[in-house]
Image (cartoon, rainbow, N blue to C red):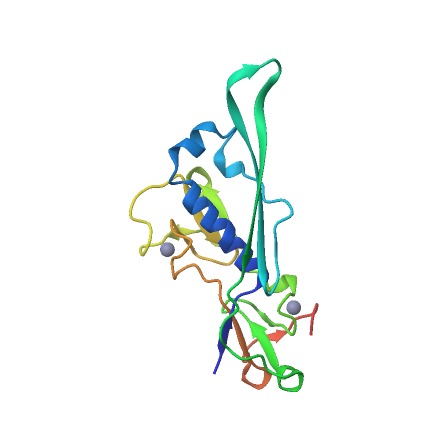
Length: 194
Ligand SMILES: [Zn+2]
Ligand SMILES: [Zn+2]
């Protein structure tokens, strides 16, 4: 039986997604942010097996100009304990026969932190959705589960085939499966971590 785990990169993408999801609801945020509100930066954000640290920086327009100062840089940081599941940790011996795979990946991985196991989720504007191609070279199609009306930005995954309006859509494949090495079928060992 396989246990679903989420890689650090994926958890961090999701945290960013939640931020955009919530920020989008507040008109005032969009009104006063300098440039586009999706230009929010996440420099220094990190995620490990226990914690997610989201560092957010953006500029706001000043309602009144003070000399040459017309905007303020805002830094916010949030630190959250990451839910790491209720599965007991396996001892090292047992661990060694397990590998990590993704549904669409060509390789299996020994190291869950391997960068080639990255299933990144990106935000893309609706103007760019038609020209965007996934890492297999295919187009993104409208997800019938979550896209009910036009929105300015959509979520796409590197190897996904659909664009989504909700980061929580089950169609956004982001699960990494942990399976026994002997159960791996049709995948080759990752050159970087196996
Ligand atoms: Zn790997
Ligand atoms: Zn969807």
